[in-house]
Length: 158
Image: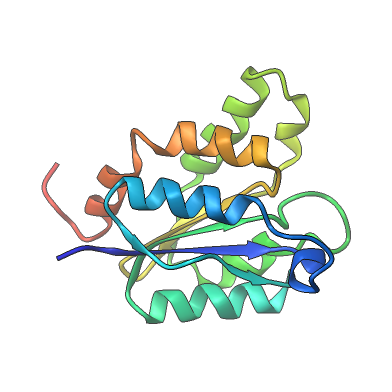
């Protein structure tokens, strides 16, 4: 049986149709390459709609929810605040590794991402930056650890 995964994109402008989201499809491709069943990205405005979308995906038995966007310092960047109340446990090392990888790739502003990672029930939720470069850096960090992390969430032997 395949595990479900989901992508939630936090973008006020993409949600309003000002431009097309480009990070969500990259993340869907990444998750499907790992063997997850993943529908197209859900694009919502930042803030409460992110919390509602993540909660809906967790409720629909997603084992992984990756969010993209809303992790910066602008007043509308509210993804960490929308995510934190849902988390049963935080997994700070994942978010720290994503920031550190970006900085090591020569993107000092990666340190400004406030993304979180944590567990909601049987689901791993990770906030990623909204830029294509930030998403590609996050994929580089997640690729070798994501399946192991998902297995650990349900107590599989390691």
